Length: 67
Image 1 (cartoon, rainbow, N blue to C red):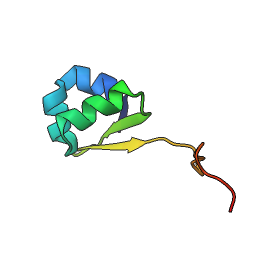
Image 2 (image 1 turned 45 degrees about the horizontal axis):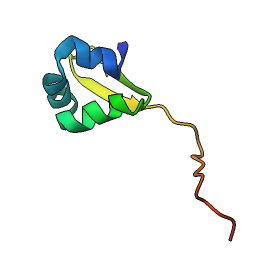
Image 3 (image 1 turned 60 degrees about the horizontal axis):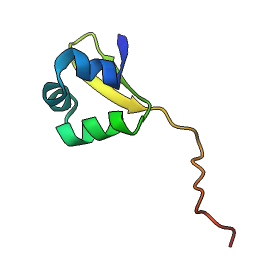
């Protein structure tokens, strides 16, 4: 398995082809890169690709208020 940052994966394959390979739109892929989402693409032994976003848990929202 090989792990590749989303931006590098998009550079390697082109945004349109990379989006197709991951099952999303080119716009969604470009926005994820533009806003700096921490997405890692995994190349599996069978030649397929999956992507996962690394996020802290639990996600803390600045707008959340105590009840």
